[in-house]
Structure formats: structure tokens, C-alpha cells
Amino acid sequence: MAVPAAAMGPSALGQSGPGSMAPWCSVTSGPTRYVLGMQELFRGHSKTREFPAHSAKVHSVAWSCDGRRLASGSFDKTASVFLLEKDRLVKENNYRGHGDSVDQLCWHPSNPDLFVTASGDKTIRIWDVRTTKCIATVNTKGENINICWSPDGQTIAVGNKDDVVTFIDAKTHRSKAEEQFKFEVNEISWNNDNNMFFLTNGNGCINILSYPELKPVQSINAHPSNCICIKFDPMGKYFATGSADALVSLWDVDELVCVRCFSRLDWPVRTLSFSHDGKMLASASEDHFIDIAEVETGDKLWEVQCESPTFTVAWHPKRPLLAFACDDKDGKYDSSREAGTVKLFGLPNDS
Image (spheres, rainbow, N blue to C red):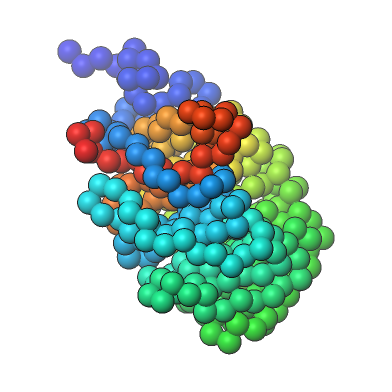
């Protein structure tokens, strides 16, 4: 006899019990075939491995577009690049040159050899993994905290602590435009079509500008508190925002309406990543786990245990592998010393 879903309890369903869905969400009658399939996969691939990367905490991790390399940026003023071998990351190089913390980095959207770093030293640097050299240093007006590369590869946008966003030509390395905002700018991103530019802000809003005109299109009141991070799904159907109210909200790109909320975290949502097929969303905070949700239902698919707050998460562009970095302390020798490791979840249990 089939047991009704309600009688199974939330843990069997992989949901977080009543009240975890936004009121407008319809509750599904049980896990979807996709959820069951991925849970089966992760039962055999639930291993997380740590890889030494830096001498201080890791702020940002990102995969190259071909998935062959993972880059990390750290408080130790460097970036590291790893090669993904079968079930492990092998450190290829450490990139020195910044005079302050590397707060965020990203790769060129279609060239797997180039990545760019944003630093508190008032510069951004573009690096080439083939020569392991810095190919450009661009001076900016303030301490840089966030960066993104446009989907067409032509422009890099960088935001600083004074809420100025500078648009830099990726070929000439010169500033094309600069916008001073009157609100606290958190994360920035183009949409996948490259014709709109999104900013999350300290008032809980998502501000949308036309691109390249940079004229205001819309401001959405997304959250009652600080809207921290934003990510677009690779399929171009949704984007997600995370906020200080511990909620992740999923938005329809075309309609600009919220379609569902995920509320399993208890702390401000710092970082988000969609899987390559757009079907899973990882979100993390100061909670000691990373939530992995099925995008279409909001159901809990898995949780990745961690021992400290998570700063950054990134799904591999082709495989169900999640790179992340936490505020780890090296407990073996000195509990105050930062460990600076990069972690990889989704490895075979027997690896």
C-alpha cells in the first residue's frame, strides 16, 4: 500500500516541513523523478574533499566555461587556479600581484583561458592561464568588491565599496561608463541576453537597467531586507536572489515576477549557484550546511554539511560537482588560523 506523502514526514520527502513554501506555491505530492534520481546519485557521490588553496580565507570560487579549471580568490591577496582531474583538484598556479584582498573573480564567458579578479587595492586584473601572466591591470576609483563579465565577453563590470559600478572594455581595458548609485550596491549581473543589467541593493530591491544605455527599466521590491546576491540560470528562464531575511526567491526572467521562495536557511543568504542544467539551486549562508533545492518545486534535494559559514558556491558547468569555500579555521595547530581551503562536493564515496 502506498503511504500518503503527508504521513511520511518532511525528512522522507526531502522537504523542510510545513511553512517552507511560499503561500502561492502549490505543494507537490512527493518528490519528482528528477529529485529521486539526483538523490540516488548523491547517495553514492556525497563525498566532500578539501584542497589547500590559500594562506587565508577564500572569498570566491568560479569554474572556467569548459569546466577544466577552478579559480579561487582570497584574503591573502592572491588567486589560485586548479585543474580538475578525475576526482580531485590539482593546483596549477598561484597568481600574485594584487596589493589587497581578492574579493571576487570570474572567468570569461566563452574563453576558458581568461579570468578577472577584483581587489580592495583599487584595481582589477585580467589573467591568462596559458602564460600565467597578468595581461592587464585596470585602475579603478575605489576598493572593488564585486565583478562580472558580460555574456558576450566584451565588457567587465566592477562595483566598489562606494557604490560606483564601472564598465570596462575587455579588449582595450578602458572604462566605457561609470554609474554612481544612491543605494548600497551588493551583487551585479547581466541577464543572459546581455541587454539588461541587474543590481541587488541594501534596501531589498533589484534594480534593472537597460544595457548598454544604462537607463532605469524597473525596480523590484524583492525582499523586506538587504538583497545580497543574484544569479541567472544557464537556461535563461529564471534568476534567483538571496537576502538578509534568509530567503532565496526565484524570479521569472520574462515576467519579472517571483515564482517561489526557498526558506530552509536561517541566516542571510550570501551565495547562490544554478547547476548546468538549471534544475538545481545551491544556496549558502552562515548555516552549517549548503541547501540544494530542485528549482521547479523548491523541494529539498540534498544538503551539504560544512563546519563553518560558507562564503561562495559554484556548480561545475557540465557535471553535478559543487565547489565551495567556508570560513574554516585550521584547528589542528591554531584555532584562529584561517585554513584557506577549497572544497568539492559530489565525489564518489569510494574515491
